[in-house]
Each structure stands twice: as C-alpha cells, then as structure tokens.
Length: 491
Ligand code: NAD
Image (cartoon, rainbow, N blue to C red; front, side, top):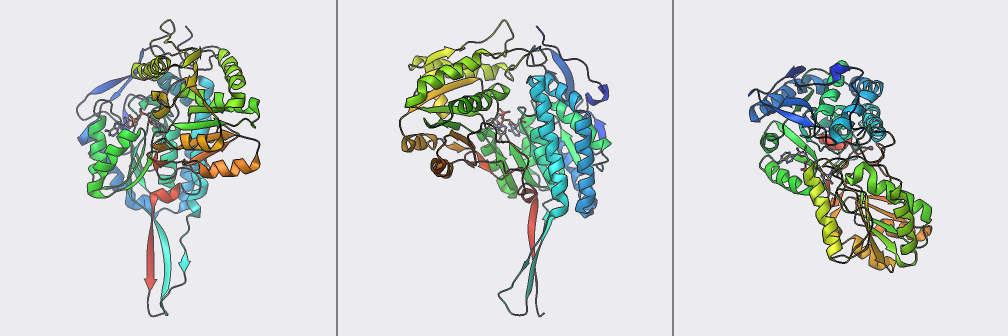
C-alpha cells in the first residue's frame, strides 16, 4: 500500500533511550512503551516510559547546568544554536522520515516542517546576542535606573505530536537563547523525532544538562504534575489542547510559575464576495487540509458570502477531488492518516452530526478501512449551521464545513462567537475592509488573502481560551526572561 518509510541514512538518529544530562538512558523502572506508525499500526520503536523519579532527575540535571550556561555570552549560545540548526538541515531527510513514520504526514510536508523547525534555531541564534535592557530617566533626582534581562531559570516544555519537530524547536530555541536550561516532555505519539533532535543537540556541543528530554505515554499526567509542581522549574511553556492547558495552569498555581500557553483554535475562514475566488479557494485548501486538518491554526469554520457561496463550494470541492490519501511515503500522496483512531472517531461524529442537522456532503464523509484504520476521506460539507458541533468544537481533521453569511457585521459576530481565538483568515480585495476586519477579529493571528501564516519572524499565539504568550519573533525570547530593575541612589 506504499505505507512503509525507508530506513534512515544515519541509523544512529533512531533512539530507544532518552537524553538526560548528556547521556542516553532508560527509565528507572525499566519500563518502555511502543511507538506506532499511524498509517499501518506497525510498531516502529520502543522508548522509556519515564515517571516522577525520572522527571525529577531531569529537572536536577537542568538545575545543575544552569549556573554555567546562563553565564555564557549570548554570542556563545548563538553559536551552539546555529550549529544545531545546521545539523538539522544536514540531516533533514532523516528527521523528515521519522516525522512521517510516527506522525503520518506526507514526506514533502515533513521536509517542510524540518526546515520550519530548524529556522527557529537560526532565528533565535540571531536573537540571542541582541537581548537588551534599558536605561530609564528616574523620577527621583539623583537616582539612576536601568534594567537587565536575566534567564528565568529551568523551564518545563510540553509539546504535541502534530508538529513533532517544530513545536519543540519553537520553545527550546528561545529558551537557550535566553540562557535557560530545559526539561522537555516529548509528545507520547512522536518521541523518536524529539530524540533525534536531542542527538543533534549533543553533536552541536550543547553542554550536558542544558537540554533534557523525558519520554512518557501512560505516565504523561504524572510527568506533567512533576514539572508543574516543581519549585525548581520556574517556567512552563505548553502547546496542546485547551483542556490540558487549564489543568496545567491549576497545577502551576501553587508555585506561581511564569507560563506560556499555545492552546486549541477554531479558526474562522471568511470569504467575502469581493475576494479573488481562485486565491481564496487555494488558501482554504492549504489552511484546512494541511496535515489532514491537524494543525491548531487550520480553518475550522469556513464562512462564504451568499453571492459566491455556490461557486466557491464547487471550485473548492473540485480541488479536493485531486487529493491522494495514503501512507506518507507513498507515491504522489498528498494527505496522510490521522494520528489515532480516537481522532477518526471525533471527525466521524462531527460529520454525522452535521448530516443529521441538514448538512450536505459534497465529497468524502467516510472512513477509509481499505487504506487503514486511521484514515478519513477529505470531506466537504455545505449548508452548515451554527448549532452543529463543528461550529463550536475544533474538529482537528480533514473536514471542511461551509457556512453561508450575508454581511460583514454578521460574519464578524459569528467568527468571534468562539471561546477560543488563535488564528483567523479572510479574503477580500477591499483595502478598507482588510484593515477593518483584521482589527475586529478576536484572534491572536490574522491571515488576509493567505491561508499560511507561520513564520519564525512573526509572533505566534492566541487570545481568549487559545492561551497567552508569543512564540517566534522578537517577542519569543522575552517569554524566557525576567526584567530586573536596578536603582542606584545618591548619584
Ligand atoms: P493534548 O493537550 O492532549 O496534548 C498535548 C501534549 O500534552 C502532549 O505531549 C501530551 O502528551 C501532553 N499532555 C496531555 N495531558 C497532559 C497532562 N495531564 N500533563 C502534562 N502533559 C500532558 O493535545 P493533543 O491532542 O495531543 O494536540 C492537539 C491539540 O493541541 C489541539 O487542540 C491543537 O489545537 C493544539 N495545538 C495548539 C498549538 C498552538 O500553537 N496553539 C499548536 C499545535 C497544537
């Protein structure tokens, strides 16, 4: 079925142990868990099932490494990040194979992710030497006031499986640039990519204890609790669902940690009838179906103005017909599996709910048992209404629901009715509307006449229940620093 991924060029990037304190180790309990290929269900590796004691050891290693690492100059840390970046680029094929293997996304997409992920190291290697404090004119005569930026300390990083490399580099890059040391919990579904990155960190000469990973699947909650309740960990950065984010925030409250949360979205994607239809269709295809709809910024509710609704639906469906679904390494495959059967069930229930309430399936709508148990047909449903589950819940799968709207005020209201606000998109050729709607949408990121907004140079993050904090950009390092103020009196 074209499911299998060829072996790595450098087999030493495939790890069965976890990287802590500069060494490859197993779990203290000796336990392991299996990593499976979502396209076939085949077991592709076994990694340590770590617990509280393992996590505490990783935190201790990060704490021990902190004093000397934070004393390095920004330039010295920049050189390490730059080396790590180069090693990712040099090994891009192998890392992409691991991503396709354990996440399922098509190899070309996985290659794209590796470049995107490595770019965070490059970007933050450039930011590391440029962390400036300020001098402040004092209000009290004779005083001198200035600020210095200091690393916040040991950071706990928790990331999801949907971008097995990029979600990790987007956190470790700025953390190391700031002079922090880290304990990163690898995603349970995709620990192999994380471990390959750790191997490259080692080769890049990152000092021992600066970057530590913890692998866990059934012990995930225990590891999370250990990180969030630790007095040594000063900051937690989490990317994942809103539900888990709320739990981690509660758990972090006893030690009042600095937090950054990148949580779920339910992106509105609005096509006004003055839009360039071809561009809007292409943008919707990318935004909706990239990674089979498993991106936090993917279009979830597609609102199309009544004047062009039918034409949009027809052209959009036509494009979906050309998709080829299969194992990520298969010839010409454009779309891979979902991560697991739970994800397939959620997608199926959203589709069924829409059909029950009058939605009309234009293409797809079914599971694909002939291809594999984690596959779902790319699906387009028209005549969607706001009572349907897809309108209020993140589907996280390859289902495009088309909603019809009449005017700008209505659609902005509908778009803003979600509890979350991560990304939002709209398409229009009217420049005044472009400014107006970009300002009116309650989201952290807006794509105007484009469906692709991710860029290491641009601040990534949400509002409302999509969380807080910004990753990437000149703001990214700030999340890992504290501002210390110094007042000199009697000058
Ligand atoms: P999830 O919240 O279940 O898991 C995310 C990560 O948290 C995983 O590594 C998981 O192992 C870990 N985790 C789960 N429970 C935990 C606990 N109790 N303590 C500590 N760690 C725990 O999310 P998911 O289903 O794996 O990922 C999809 C979700 O992530 C979607 O909602 C998506 O929108 C969101 N996401 C957001 C962004 C963003 O930048 N805002 C990016 C990617 C994904």
